[in-house]
Length: 199
Image (tube, rainbow, N blue to C red; front, side):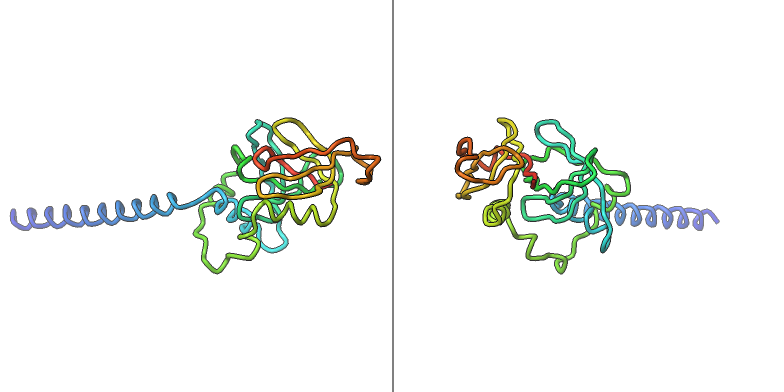
């Protein structure tokens, strides 16, 4: 009888050790997976969790400390395109370089969705497009933009996009980019840009 109790006890200890080892292994694998997640991947997972036609609202905190309520529309390699939400009736389209993001405020549901495993097949062409390419596109379309920079807000039209900066023809909001309307030309380094608002 005593031997049976001893063997039962040893069997129980072995089973607990095996379960503990398996749990430790799963925990270690999950930590390794989380170590590989980037901010871009987590934002992509939040956007994808809305499903087709769905929208997610998140708050993006910029390095300036300003928090923007946005509804993400597209995510590139190093930028986020979104509709700015706020007091205005018509949302304003914007592009936020990920280097200007100090944090993202998520709900519990969004936070859990952001941890999803991203499959390789979800990669799209847009995912590889960098911030300078977006600026080139705005330059070609001659869109009036409002740049939030470390030095203040600049309004104008992008004339040229170089390797690490752009040329902005600064003119009043609501006017076309015509030579008499241009106040001055400004070279703006990309790293100075926090938000590009399309006007």
